[in-house]
Image (cartoon, rainbow, N blue to C red; front, side):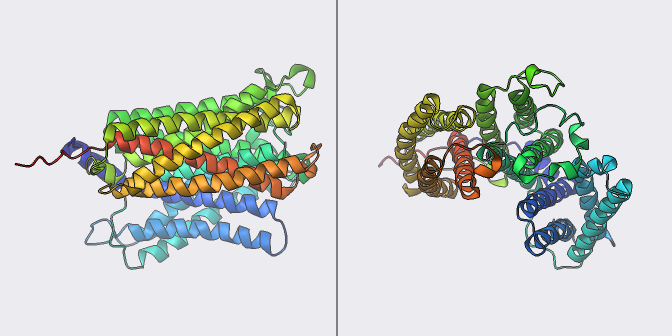
Amino acid sequence: MTQVTTMQRSQSDGGSRGSGCRILAAGFGATTLMWLLSYLAILIPGPIVGEFLFGLAVLSLVGGGLVAGRSDRGLGQTTTRPGSGLLQGLFVGLVSAILNLLVVVSLLKSEMAGGMGWIVGILDGCLIAGGIGGLVGGSMKPWRTNGNWLTIFCWVAAGLTFFMIVTGGVVTGFEAGLAVPDWPNSYGHNMLLYPLSEMVADPESGVFFEHAHRLTGMFVGLTALVLCITLWIADMRMWVGMLGLVVLVLVIMQGVLGGLRVTGVLTMSQDAADLSPSTMLAIVHGVLAQVLLAIMAVVAAVTSTRWLRGEVSIGSGRLPTDRQLAIVLLVCLLIQLGLGAAYRHLGTDLGTRSPAANHALLGHIVMAVMVAIMGVFVGLRASGMEGRDRVFVWLGRTLLISIGAQILLGIAAVAAVMMRPEAGTTADVPAWEVLLTSAHQANGALLLALSLLLVAWYHHAFEPPSKVPA
């Protein structure tokens, strides 16, 4: 059984247990939750629901500070420095404040009075919320577990990427992909300085959905950069650092593809005569986002304590067969997701009844049958064979549940799209249809991530030698 060397393990564990990874995990995690809740609050405005969601967004930062402050005493330390919880919470607030500048910096050019005052107030608010959480956490009884904070940070990055995929699905669902006609600017503004008031002014224009997706993509890009640097510092395995670099490169590619999908060429012009939106790039952009999520999930797996502990056992199963089946499922899912992305974007650009869209839909349905059969077989084999490590049991059962949900969502999404006439504006697309199509797309991304995780764990596994009678 291949083992990680003592030096690699200690260096990796030491980095993952350091306060830096803990602060990054808590700060990025709390901010991701803040963005999600704020996104929902704008989608569901009102004096009760909207304000309640915004209140939860603030509390999420308090929670991030609490996690960082309380964990400071749960890492094998026998003593706690006075004020340590407060300090950790303030650092979490600072991280969140810096990330939130991606949105609030636009207030500098806003017609709202006192734009700089708003920014200072938001920054102070983040520090205060994080600090309060840190104080509360520092005064609480410490947890009796040592968290692998590098792995937690990796999962936070994956969760943020999943959020980006969902916002992208909403953009496609509402057919708002070209609501902002230029890139890298937004209606002539620097993307970060596009006024929030204009972003939310007309819900039916689709500008909010498209620009929110762009801002989330920038958040993912910054997270990928920090994650790449952290992996090189906190994990001494070079191939893990290279995986972080691959993630960063893919995020950059994803951003460029998303922009060129809108303009077709590198230009700052908003004139339709200078632009040629690309359906093909939209399809590639959609598939690459799901590949990115899957790779991020693998990065989280390979930094986990379970992975570092050594190879896992698959009992009496046939390991070469398991590996081959997992790879076949992965390839089938990639083809299936490509066909699904082709149908969605061809349907948006050419119409859901166009011949090209119908051909993509037919291929998607046929491939779905193959994926379902293959996925059920792989899932049952991973979870049902005697002696399997619990990693495979969990992945197999989750795969089976996700396949069942995907079939139901797929049927419902196709029926919803076919039941309505061609959309003319964002308002013509019912919200329940967007919910179904986006959920179907998001669950497909999870299926791809589960499949790649199975491939990774099978290649990390070993099969015990057969017992030969004396």
